[in-house]
Amino acid sequence: MQDFIRTIIDFDQKLFLAVNSMVGTSSIIDSSARIIGSDYVVPVFLSLILIFLWYKETSILRKFKARLTVLNSIFTLLGACSIVFILNQFLFRERPFDLLEANLIFYAPTDSSFPSNSVAAVVGLAIPVFKTYRKIGYLMLSSGLCLAFCRIYVGIHFPGDVLGGILTALVSFFLSTVLMNLFSRQLYLSLLIFEKWKWLKIVRL
Image 1: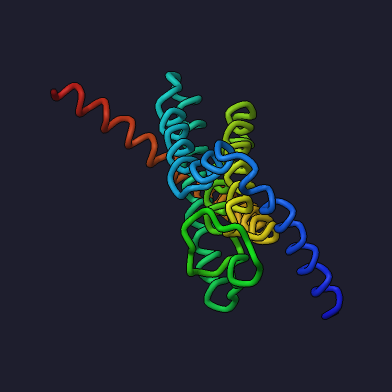
Image 2 (image 1 turned 90 degrees about the horizontal axis):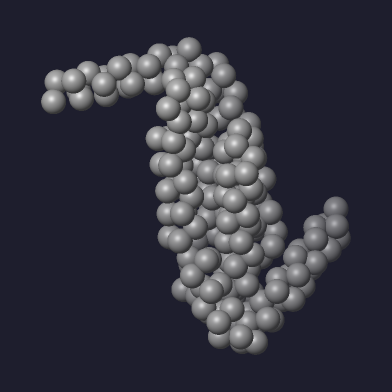
């Protein structure tokens, strides 16, 4: 078993070095990777898409469908981040630049490398949308995977960390969907109250 784990870790490190070794071949690619792999660009982009989904529909049924999807994305995000936090209390993996001669072109995080919190977050936002709105979901998932690749490229995550983040998001999505199905009536009622309150406020103005 230990030999098997060692083999996986060795493969993970070799794959990281293969990707990270491309650093320096193009200053444009390096700069783009730093931007896409940052903590803000992709998360903000995905958040704007969720805001668009929240307001895009006009019919009440489609509106509720869109808003339940957005809520599922938010719950999946929160669940994924919570799972990562719990795992990090028991498991700590050093960053690639601490273990290998990596080409670090990003700031050096000090928290555990596994699983990737940023990847878990953005993929967690994307999966519920992908389930309901395929085209928009493809865009969101593609953005999340670009962030994942860039985090490897700039030297702060192993590929295994990224895969762990994706699996964490999938687990969180499953749990979020189960809970939303259990409390679907309460969620619909809350959305209905929100909608009526909004129109009541407009009439009063």
